[in-house]
Length: 632
Image 1 (tube, rainbow, N blue to C red):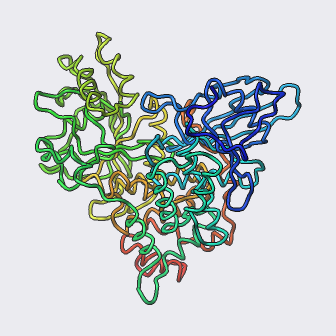
Image 2 (cartoon, one colour):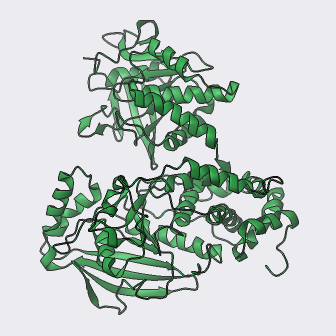
């Protein structure tokens, strides 16, 4: 009753023994495991079942655990992996009371904070749970995601006593792989070597079949190799000016800067997509829908169109999901539509309930780049199965904004469910937000009208790889976030569009991710942000100029938000579902640069004026503290 299976049992010599006076038996499917430096550093446990939830919390209290590492979802592929062992507010598990204080949601993992108390005891403790949600059973996640997850855990437990409880479903596969990676990284920091084989051998003496498959064993090696190639790339606010200065210096032998070396390493660790992975875009009926036939989204990360257009329409659009800092699939990146795919863009916006469109190109309209929205306020224009109306338009020196209403035409009502069913029959997952929209699309007699706002950045000329002024991009990011948080019904993506669906889009996503991380952690990691946006579309941020600009923009942003008279970082709108934000003012107090730091970083005020060779100008600023003649 207390074991999920017979192949995932702890060894008697190291199993956790419960105090019998609290439980009917002293047994729980959990065992102590040593790290490289510490004895009993981990407790590898089976995921709690409905029969063992009370025992689990007893173990947490008895062993003085302050951190729980959960490397599974509650359900995977319609099968329960683990019992939900906490309530949304308050629960009692035998004589242990547990309160959920808060939940922070990030793209790959959730962080929950619990307050626990034993009945009859005055002591209260805080326990933090890190739940990794992108690692399914019998599969392996992106090594970069796991390394970031592990980094956040280690930053938290730095001064925390007690063992780390690590559990998955059975407590062998994913549990063992995480422990092996963590222990080998600890060893690497001490003796600069790893010994995966012997460590895993020692794990198996403690827990039967831990690291269950060859794939999981190989994943430990792959993750360590990723770390050895990339290292730690997180930079605090105070370190940033000095790191950028170091990266901008050229090697006298190779004449290459640190940026060159870092970008080359980055590109080498991003896997290339195969034709098979991008099969949808290479089908004969879809090939004409892409500006570049070799630039296709992978099947695993493309949004499928659901609204039926005409008899020969398909579910394909050349668009790809990109994860954000706080949200999986935070962005949908796509190309400027062709004349033949204008309807598809609006189908995408309608099907995925997208409230925000960001245009990063202010193009001159032509046959190659057609206008794909109505021009007269109040007029409804048909785009295939949808009708779109321009409600209002506003213009500022840096951007143009347009508000549209969109609804499905009457004769196309009722077809969406059929399309969803056909997609699901092929084994493809349709997002919960889309499924939730189905009743509203057909049950009501009145057409569903949705509001969409389009932001067009004007301060990024077509002839330049980077914007002429960072202030325009700062304003865009601020207004997009405020609109999206206010009008977004859930974790809905933002649609980001450029001419080819590559240039500029990568920069925008990376900068947005870096900004979110800055507010959450007081640090930046441009390297990791670029690496993650390139996972589903390797061509994003495909040149050194854009990569350097991601760094320099953050420098400009820091100078902007800390300058006298400038407003602080935008506050989260009231009612927002995104709770992982520092309180207003916290960032400035914690991370304000000193006068010495500002002396080094003062040049960043001038970076928005740079229109030439970014790397050259950066080196000039550091060398002379001022721009070259004629660059003011």
